[in-house]
Amino acid sequence: MPQTAAPRPRVLSGIQPDFSLHLGNYLGALRNWARDQDRFENFFCIVDLHALTQHPDPERLRSLTLELAAMYMACGLDPNRCEIFVQSHVPAHTQLCWILETLTPMGWLERMTQFKARSQAQGSERINTGVFAYPVLQAADILLYDADVVPVGEDQRQHIELCRDLANRLNSQRGDVLKVPAALISQVGARVMGLDTPDEKMSKSLAVDRPGHAVLLLDPPDVVRRKVARATTDTEPAVHKPLGAGVANLLEIYAALHEISVDAALEAFEGKSYSILKGAVADAIVDALRPIQARYADLRGDEEGLRRVLAESAARVHLVADATLQRVQKAVGLR
Ligand code: TRP
Image (spheres, rainbow, N blue to C red):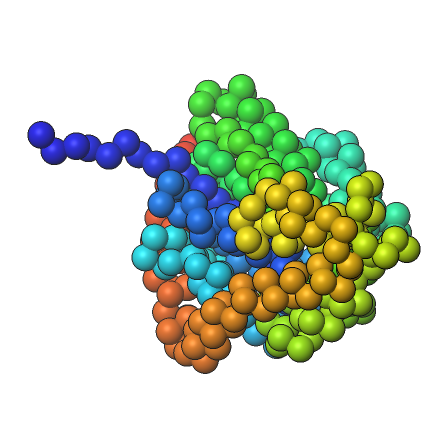
C-alpha cells in the first residue's frame, strides 16, 4: 500500500539584511536550518522591512538583500526544498502587521528588552516607531505561514512570546484563526560569543567597528587566522579548568565545527597551550568556510539566477500568506 507521508511541521525564520553574516549566524542558525530541512516544510525570509528601521543606504540594502539570499543557499539551504524569499516582496506582511498592531497594547511593546535598550540609547524623539512596532511585524512574518516552529536565538525568545500572545488574543476574541507557533532555541552553537569580548554574544553590528569581534563568513583564511589568534583568552598559559569565558568560547566553536561535545573538545586540549587551541580552531573555521565561500561566489555572481529564485519563491509563498490574511480579514470584519 502506498504510504502517505505525514505532513511535516512548518518552520519559519528570518535574518535582517543589515550587516554581513558571521560564524555565530552559521553555527547558531543557518547550519541548523540546512541540517533540518528534510524534517520541515521550510520558510526562510530575508526581512528587509525590519532592516529599514536602521535607515540603511538604499544601494547597500539592495546589495545586502542579494548577499543574504546567496549566503542562505551557500550555507546549504536548497531552493528546491526551502522557500527563500524577501519579506517586502509579499505585501501581506505589512497588511497583517497593521491588523495585529490594533490588537497590541503599547505596554507589551514597551516591555520588549530590545526596544528598551534602543530607546534608552537614542531617546524617544530620535527612535522611529518602526523600532517600536518591530515585534508586531515579526509576529506577522510568522503567523502568515501558520508556522509550527520558529528557530531563533535566545535573544528572540521574548519576540516569539509576543507573537504567541497576539495569536492567542485574536483566537480568543474571534475563534481559532491563527496557528500558535513555538520557539525552537538551538542548544549547540547557539551562543557563539564575541572573540574580543567573550561575555557578549557575537553580533553583526558590533563587528562593524570592531573587526576582532567576529569571524565573518566571507573572511579569507589569513583574516580568520589573525582574528582567532587575537581572541581574548585569560592569563593562564594553557587550557585548564575552570575555563575563562574566552577559552570556553573557542572550545565551543571547535566542538560545534567538529560536531563533538564540549567535554570531548576540552579533553583534546586539556593542558595544551592557547596557541595550539587557537591554531586548531582557526583550521576548523577555514575548513568549514572554504566550501561556503566557493558556493557563495558562484551564487552571488549570478544575479539573474538569484533574483529568479527569490521571485519564484515569493510567487508561491504569496498564496500561503494571502490565504491567512483573508482568514484574519474575515474574522475582524474587513471582508
Ligand atoms: N528579529 C529577528 C532577529 O533579529 C529577525 C526576524 C524577523 C525573524 N522576522 C522574523 C526571526 C520571523 C524569526 C521569525 O533575529
